[in-house]
Amino acid sequence: MGHETSTRNSGVIHAGIYYPAQTLKAALCVEGRERLYAFAAQHGVPHDRCGKLIVAATAQEIPALERLAERAGVNGAPVDLVDRAFIAAHEPHVAGVAALWSHTTGRIEPEAYVRTLQRLASAAGVHVLPASPLIGADPHPSGIALRTPHESIAARLVINAAGLWADAVSATLGGEAFTIYPCRGDYAELAPSRRDMVNGLVYPVPHAPGHGLGVHLTRTTWGSVLLGPTIQYQDRKDDYESNRLPLEAFVDETRALLPEVTLADLQPASSGIRAKLCPPTEAFADFLIQRDTANAHIVQVAGIDSPGLTSSLAIAARVAAIVSDAA
Ligand SMILES: Cc1cc2nc3c(=O)[nH]c(=O)nc-3n(C[C@H](O)[C@H](O)[C@H](O)COP(=O)(O)OP(=O)(O)OC[C@H]3O[C@@H](n4cnc5c(N)ncnc54)[C@H](O)[C@@H]3O)c2cc1C
Image 1 (cartoon, rainbow, N blue to C red):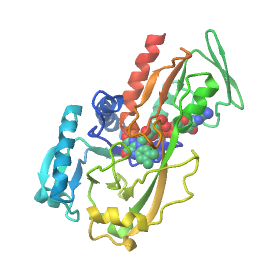
Image 2: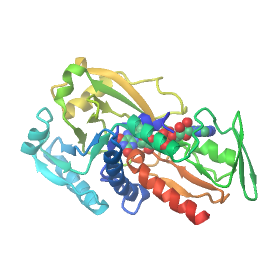
Image 3: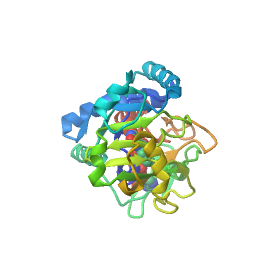
Image 4: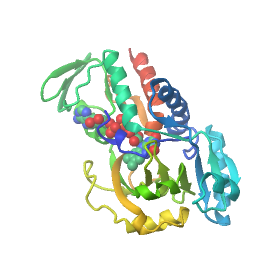
């Protein structure tokens, strides 16, 4: 864990504003966010509950803000509709006529979080085998024999949380069939001398429901200001670099929020790949978290795209409940 998507993301602790009601994403985001704040405080993981603005650029966007506020309230992520003066007080360089203020949104340092989980797991007696990919599996009536290049492991229960590769791992295990569609997100960032233009998290009103939140501004716990991520489905699951959008492609959307920005203020930054269960033609897929329908010795934890980091501890609690049910 931690070498792929969990350390290639925005590090935002999402409130749970956007997800359709009655979905796992809606429920586990809200539960996971509170678990994550408590965990980060307990274990000294850099984080804060900095809040977030969703900004209407024009008065025409205010009805969309109001609809979003309604959904947020239903989901357990209450927001306030705020005016231009509130925006100016929090983010003097951001343009907008009104905004939603989400006070339960925050940010965390993903690498420190993953390292802490790994340390705690090892201390609890978990064996971590980082260079041991699953390459084969032999199901038998009481479990599955797992094969790696170095060893064979007798498992009574296998939790498939293989991220981008969860579909391949399920096939190897003899579990149910599904497809993970890799969908890349590229970031730019503000040049260090311009970072003080942004204090926190600033998002536009989402335009295309389902496929991301629009290019937004994220000031991270370590002080950089990320712009992005973009959205581009691709064929490969391990290609973080080819066909990167030029910096020019970030200028218009960034200027919509931050009018003073020019191309000279931007520099390239990292990228990440979302493990999506929905193909480009569909707007939404929920997390897949359940006992496998083909083999009861497998628990599937797949399609964990955003808000997966936020939801992680709630996902773990849910998996633990499924596992104890299966015992
Ligand atoms: C651009 C981007 C921005 C995001 N921003 C946010 C955000 O701000 N907030 C938020 O809540 N979420 C965010 N997310 C989502 C979040 O990052 C993911 O939901 C989460 O990291 C998924 O974790 P995971 O453990 O499922 O996957 P991963 O971290 O990818 O872990 C999967 C693990 O499985 C291992 N594996 C794969 N195949 C095998 C095999 N055959 N054998 C053994 N091991 C294997 C891999 O090595 C890896 O360690 C973002 C995602 C992206 C891409």
